[in-house]
Length: 537
Image (cartoon, rainbow, N blue to C red; front, side, top):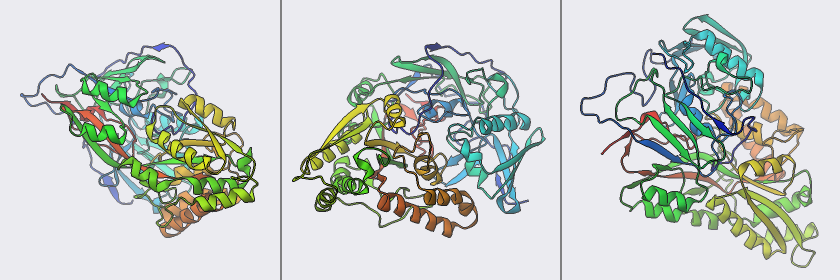
């Protein structure tokens, strides 16, 4: 996966073959009985629609599945699971609002501390069970109890009630925009808890696809097939079969697309993206994202315990040169929070300052006239953008008598090493679980005794306290919330120097030209909602 955001170790190996049983007062939000955005709503196809027997082939650069359990899944498998499972709502990045999915409408009351969702009728799980309020309640409660992945999104929930078969009521401990929470890319899935096996595996979602086969470690790792009983219905021209073909090298992926062997490459380097724009039978898509690159510095062990060396590394990065070389695939960041989210601040764009870097290194006893400093760095195997950053940084640091021992790694290996504090610099992407900046701060910078995603190993009680205040502030006083986000970014980036944030990605995709209906939604990074697509001749 390009973003290398997160991973929880899978408890399953080998080949998995799974076959689904197909069976047939506040402000009101949503529209009763409407289908999910982009779905057919069960309507009959036009007579001119041609049957689509082809397989849609998606090309990720890393393994797809790291954890099957929809309660704790928190990694690359989002690109598959978002097509197998559904939540109560789905975020529309164009309207910037949550829209109906398994819930058709909802109301909030008591200043955002009470939420009531009306559920869509006639929805079946892949297991054959019927979706009702009690089933949805059990799924969310199981996710909360598991306390894994992004389960924190439900932290405000005090009580869930199945008022009747179609009515789900939440009572909260503090105000929360629960319609957005319910649209989260992780931990918001509604699934049949009775169909979860002892290892946490299940395909009992309500989405348009079920698992056909999974072969861990194989090139075609995962295949999906249509769920005949999907509530959204099917047209002949939609893709009934999907395959994920893992291809680490981006050039190889593009060649497969040119030859018509695959349909979707999630990211190209600038040169290939430009070439794709003039290639027959290929089209390109470009979309701003909420996904940024984090260069995390080890604040706990090794030479980077010295804040001056961390600040020197921040100053050594050629931010402008990197942005120019990315040729539109990334824009310089301003702080941790991308534009378009509450908490974004202007005026924090970083700049390279080699004189400052040399001065800071000299204060710490390193630099051109001092002993050589060796630092270890890990980054994503097969990611040309990260490799470019590493190349530019290595060159700049070499002039300062700092040797960067950079190692490209698979995400699983990189993350394992990061948990063990086995490197000085850890590079990865991050994006929010739902369209809110809280995810960066809670997951990446709040103190952890056992590292998960805080891979700078920052521990600061004052920062932790402000992070804990963010959800309620966001719901009750967005001005104060914005100020809290700004203060946190100053502390984490400037004072603690725990991270450098070079750029925010602009998604650059390439698709086969016979695919219609694709819309990039940055709230679900790298997800293709296959049911929205059709093949045209």
